[in-house]
Image (cartoon, rainbow, N blue to C red; front, side, top):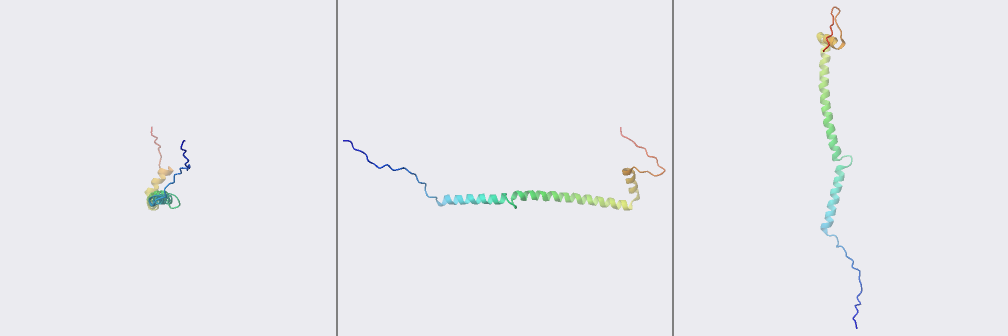
Length: 111
C-alpha cells in the first residue's frame, strides 16, 4: 500500500515587515525636503521671484544714475542758455541754420 500524503495546502503569502523607525524617519525627511523646496521655489516670496526682483532693482538703480547724469547735463545747458550769449549764438547757427544780417553762409558737403 502506498502512503498518501494528506497535507493541507496553504497559500504562501509573504508579509512585509512592519515599517521600522528608520523607514518612517526617511519618509518624513523626504516629505519635509519636498515641502521646503515647494515653499522656497514657488509662491509670492519664492527664491526665483526674489532673484528677478533683485535684478530689476539693479537695472532701475542704473537707470536712475543715468537719468541723474542726464539731468545734470540739462541743468548745465539751461544755465548756459540763460547766461552765455555766445553759446546761444552757436546753438542758433548749428541747430537752426541762422545767420546774422550781414553774413553769407556757405554749405560744404563732404565728398
